[in-house]
Image (cartoon, rainbow, N blue to C red; front, side, top):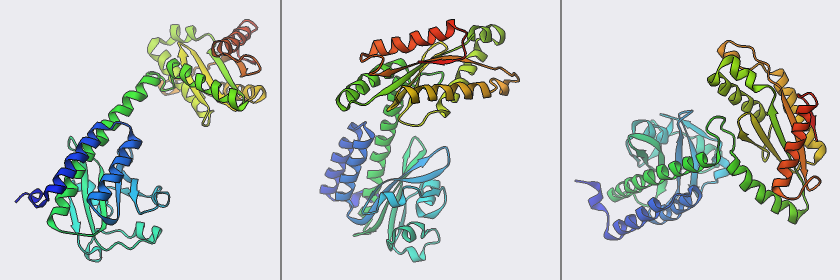
Length: 337
C-alpha cells in the first residue's frame, strides 16, 4: 500500500499549499524561509535540517536547520555514504531509524559538536531528474508513524523542484551580469552597481576609486597566436586581476582587451597602489604557458576617485579612461591617476 494513503486530509491539503508556495518561489533566501516555516509545522521534531550536495566535492553541507545552531554546523561536510544523511544521499533511498544506537550508519559528529542528543531519525533524499540535490533529515520526530515518512517524501519531492528552479533562476541571473568569456562582471552590472555606490557614498561622504586598464599591444598577440588563444589570454589576465582583489572590490570585462576595477572605500593613494599591484602581477606572470607559449603581457592603468575627480558616473569613468590613454601616449605599461 502506498504510504501516502496514511496521510490525513489536513496533511494532504498542507502539502498542496506547500507545493504551491515552493514552486512559485525563485529567490533562494525566501525559498529556504518557506521550507523552514512549512516543514516545521508539518513535521514537529526536536530538529530537522536541509543538507544540499556540493557536486564539485561530493559532500553534503547544512543549508538550513531548525533548532540547531547553523553557525555551529555550517563548516561540517558529510561525504556521500557517511552517516545516515550521506547514506541516503548515496543510495537515493529514504531511511527511518527508530533507534540511532542500533544503526551502523549513524555518525556522532553533529551531536558531539552541537551537544544535541539524537535518538531517532527520518531522512529522505531530495532528487531531481535522477540527481541527488541533498537530503532532508528530521531528528527526534514526535511521531514515527507510517504517514510521517510519506509526508517527508512528499515534502522532499516538492523541495527538489523548488531548489532546482531556484538554481536555474540564479544561473540565469548570474549570466545576466557576468561576461561569458572571462567570468568577470559585465558593463550592465558596472553601471547598475556604480549608480548605487555613488548614492551610498554621497550620503555617507565615503570615497571609492576605479581603475581603467587596457592591455598593451594586444592586437600583436591575436595576430601572432590567433583569436582563440587571444581569448584564452584574456581569461588568464582576468584571473590575474581577480587574484589581486578582495571583496567588496570587483572587476569588469569592459570590452575587448579593456577592464575596469571598482574599489569601494579606496582613496586615490590606495587606488594607485592596487593598480600597481595588478601591473606587477601581470609582469610576473607568463601567459599561455599551458598551451606551450611564453607570452608576456603588459597594461596601461588610469585611476579616478570619487568624489575627488568626479561625482557623476559617466564623468568618473571618463576621467579614468582619459588618464589611461595618457599613459598609452607616454609609453604604456604604467599607472597614473
